[in-house]
Image (tube, rainbow, N blue to C red):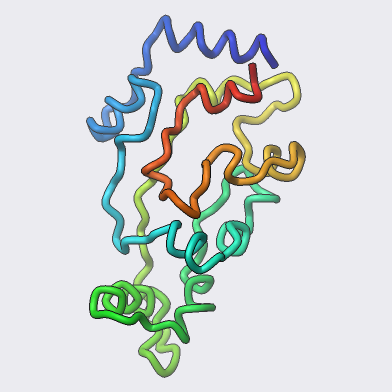
Length: 184
């Protein structure tokens, strides 16, 4: 495991963190500095982890239910949002507007399902350097996997994502040193 991390760090140092041309400049700059903290793309619906996980106390695995079984934590379907937001309609105009976009995506007119759905296309927030995904460690022939970290290693979400009850993902520094806490 240590050997893989050393190889990863040496490769990154030698080649830099050159990324694809399709990536936004702000994300390229963040990766070159080995952090993702300054990349905060706009989203079709503003979502706050600190409200949902913090104030409302919703467990991460309720929305990201594939995290124990899959490489990806997954983006919850709009149906998961509707489990609560069918009843919670928002207190002010701004909240009502955001929730209306969820209704539109789900094909819900406030009374019934209309089957006229409008999928939400979320923008990716975190990107690990290719070296993390492409270099398998001695325990796996795969690349990075959330399920291996959560189910096998028994890590809690905030082990890597800090406390999303207080911060949103774009507020949390995300870099190779985070991995080095365990993979030294």
